[in-house]
Image (cartoon, rainbow, N blue to C red):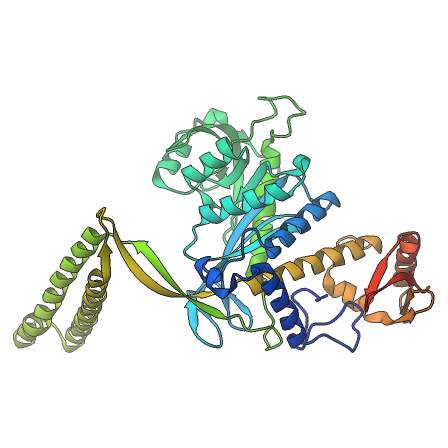
Length: 499
């Protein structure tokens, strides 16, 4: 089991920091066995047709769903509100957020998007190529999660970033999926106008100190919980915050207020609940900025790329219009270089610096127009028109094989859950991997196997701190009557802890 993402650049270690560590090759072989089992003979060709994503009904997807269900049944859900977030990822030994290229050792392929649906430590993470939209990924993962979760714990409230502000998405969540969305109102001109038209008497003054914003904090002075007419959505519930600089921002939701429904209705949310939901959403959002997906060494297996042939619809009329405009721009900048600039030099209307700047700009735009003409000409010549008049174009792309990356993330999620459970058993709620490794896991000594009695005894070094020793004894007492089985070479051993 890995020590999550902050393991030193070496190899992956076991929990007790034993000297016998599995190296990258062992991990690579194990992951490859799972991938072969997942495909069931379909192979890389089928993976390429899915743009490198995992098989929807395969072993990896089943493991994700089974993990999510088990975590929910174990009572690890934090609250009723689930959260969804997406980030662009580049792989170059360590993750780099927000890049346009996804570099591997072999070649460059388009970047990928990581989407995570989470509630506390319970998380479902999937990777998609950037061609998959936010809305499509959201719908796929919600359906996947609700299929796995117990009926009483299915997703009914979802908080996400304003990137998901889309009338179709919000309507689908509220009307078809039965999920109340919680999202910041997008700062578009019609939405800003709708918020500005809310009468002042709808607001109440905020007595306690409240701020919003990241780098530039703004103080919230007034708050309103009211119905606001929004484009393509109609009248919707919005919690509006007015800052000290007279700016208004809103939080949209379809969840009813406590006054609109009974108190035992699990769909209702107060204004305070909505504010807390978006506060925690932003807290986790900031955590993604330092999230490292791989270690900066060769211990992690290289993610391979796949060549995919795709047939996509092509707007021929729009392309021909763009080609005509590109020819016009090329003629314009060619004329500028051949006639206008020499004339300006003769008349001495501009100094040398301005003339050089104008010439360089014209050359750059001329080259850009020429490249656009070559690209569009190649595209127009490669299109195909079928009997029904539908225009398509054959594309060859490089996509990343996301199966191993998805498995690796699932392993890390299990490790995180296991460490959190260990911390709770020790009475250290909230302790992170660093503290567990430093104060507890580093003192593991050995495991002794009694082959005749089939008992595995765990021994520990003396703990330097009495508090840690008491926590270890508490853990041993809790696990004394819990049957724990360890399988080694086909033999089941009962685990015991030495005090």
